[in-house]
Structures are given as C-alpha cells and as structure tokens.
Image 1 (cartoon, one colour):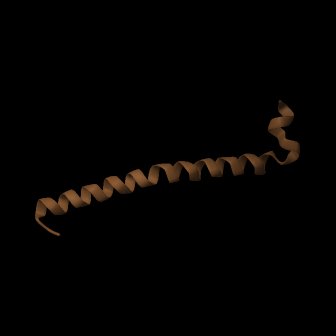
Image 2 (image 1 turned 60 degrees about the vertical axis):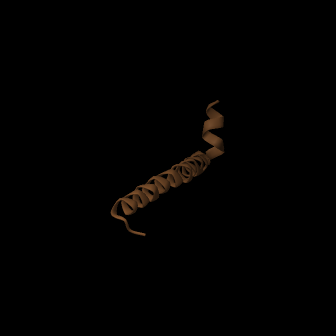
Image 3 (image 1 turned 90 degrees about the vertical axis):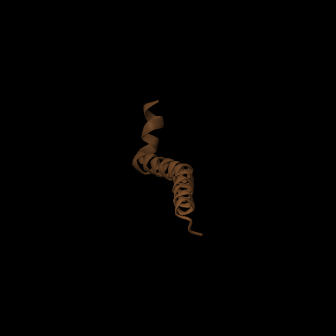
Length: 52
C-alpha cells in the first residue's frame, strides 16, 4: 500500500495532478449555480424597478 501512495517516486506530481483536477471539477460544478442565482437575482431586481 505504501508503494501505491509513493507511486515510484512520482507521488508529488501524481497527487498534485489529482488534486488540481478535483478542484477544477468542483469549480465547474459549482460555478454555473452561482451564476444562475446571480442572474435570477439581477432579473428580479430589474423587474421590481420596472426596467427592461
């Protein structure tokens, strides 16, 4: 098991790559929801003001 986590001396590069991929996948999953909420809030504010 230790050898698996050591990855033949390349563990730092391999685990850093996995971590970066996980971070970017998480951002790609969260970001559309944040943008949608912001857009809907902006639309609601414009409708309240009577703007187009």
